[in-house]
Length: 395
Image (cartoon, rainbow, N blue to C red; front, side):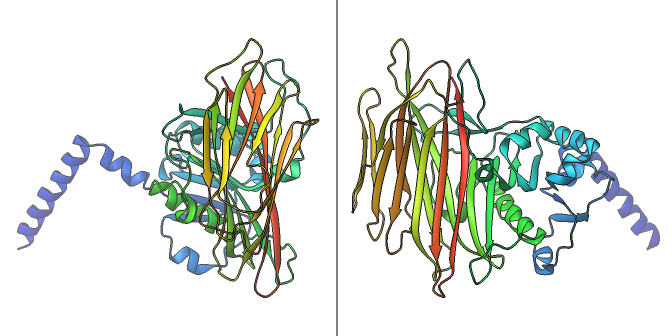
């Protein structure tokens, strides 16, 4: 009997060895099976979060680097990365190998690029217009074009920025987590909150789901950009941002024409929360560019209609339950369009679809996008926060 078992083991082992040699991807998959390496300076107190996610390894930060082949993504506190040159080199190599790298703890897109030598690029398309690759950064002088005005760094800071060079759905994450107590005062985010948000993004990315929590967004957009509003670390609502960029088919000797279609969804997770105010601003980045038009115009009810004539010939319309009031302010002196939206409850499954068109010189177009939302709970807790990012397109 022993000899029979020994013979069976030998045959089985030999077949497994032959299969692994014939198909090396079997071994590769074993080393890179969507595992997240999460480094933190503090203890993860939410043990349920760990027990429900077997594909994450949480490690107290130290100078020992993990095996780069054992994980598909890595998350580190930006302060630890700033202080460790070897860690910078390691994460740069991880990006080169197609891994996803998250920095958390207060980081801007430009800081991410500076530390890891990688700009954040996403592809956008609505299935009709030509697919474009845009860069999310803190805009600087380029192509001989000077910056019109400097934007506040405070609104550009994200709690998490994640990115991979692989051309996959949701290859980029820009996340702010607005954590409050029952008085509405801000309280610090814990590592458990950050890990939870990264894991939710990881699941969406693996499942090739474009939209957070089932919201519908622009086809083929590879960015996951959102603000999550929390009460003691429990998600209550979120503001999801997506956009399309259209280039006019005609141009003159000086200008090219662009339209930004900004899609903003203010969505409740807890039914007791209501959206009270939403502010959206588009400000041109370069002094030589000029605001052309912005829509929808001011109106007290839907459906809300947007129509851009020559040289675009594009338009759309959208509806929002409760018909919130929309007020547009166009400031031609600083080339800025701002919408103030208010109502009894402006949260919706539908998206606000706001458009700005402008004239651009040279070969690079840039625009700063700002979103601010204010919500109120049934127990009279007010939560508000904003998210800002700059978009550049080199054409």
